[in-house]
Amino acid sequence: MKYSIKSIQINTLPDAMNEFLNYLSTIKGKSPNTVRAYKIDLTMFFRFIKLYKGAIKDDIDFEKIPIDDIDNVFIRKIKLSDLYAFIAFSEEYRNNGNYAKARKVATLKSFFKYLHGKAKIIDENPAAELESPKIDKRNPVYLTLDESKKLLLSMDASDKNYYRDHCILTLFLNCGMRLSELCSIDINKIKGDTLSIIGKGNKERTIYLNSACLRAIDEYLRVRDASKVPDNEKNALFISSKNRRINKRSVERLVKKHIYIAGLDESKYTPHKLRHTAATLMYKHGNVDIRSLQMILGHENISTTQIYTHVDDERLREAVNSNPLSGLE
Image (cartoon, rainbow, N blue to C red; front, side):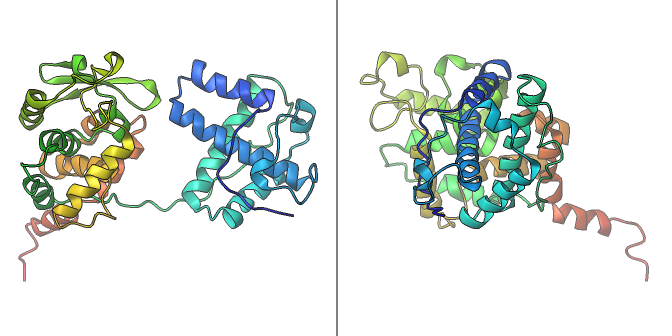
């Protein structure tokens, strides 16, 4: 049995899977990135199930296993034990940790719930009792206040992209926006000190810009040259060296570059870690309550925001030391 998995090439999909992905996109309003993640997980799942149940030749490469022939009769035969076998497979052959396995469990539970409750394709839901692996909560990695200042102040003002890059880092460190949100910023969505963006799940939210952000945007707009940018992208705030809307990979590279120049660990800090930094600085130094922080970050569930309540050991130390009994001998 050959389990060589390379990059998954998605071709024709089973009808039930296509209908589910369309449901996620059109009815549930999931973002293209989310739908793509579901598609990758389910493609891997169906390829595994065909291999696991002996429905294909053993010597075929995993990524070449066709799944377009999977019909509702095949799907109805899938049992809970098959789902656990797939999760074990993803751990052994894909080196998936608990986070990756948890995502696959969530995908399977969502898919089979749809097949049972919405599409009425299956009479019983085999994923109803599927358990997700326990995930240990990890404190967010972030820059300290001094490191954040060092990052901004260490930038070379003679660099041709200084004002653009400085604006990008300023927005990350002050607003806590996601990488995809920053790349999608349109100039006409900036109104005074507010910025409207489309966040996770295609949900629009308002970001409030402080004086540092407004100043950085203004300085960048003075030198921003969109003369060679295609008409359909002229509204993009951040322009790449190729005269197109800047993409996520370009932002990741420039963040890594400036982190390195600042003498910080470029392997440790990413655009997402700068988002963590903004949230942590607001919580630690701005006395922002957890509900407000949830709104600022665009978290659907407050439990996601609560990771920032565990980072302020110094504040806890001060609280204990402030106890009037602390000086009693």
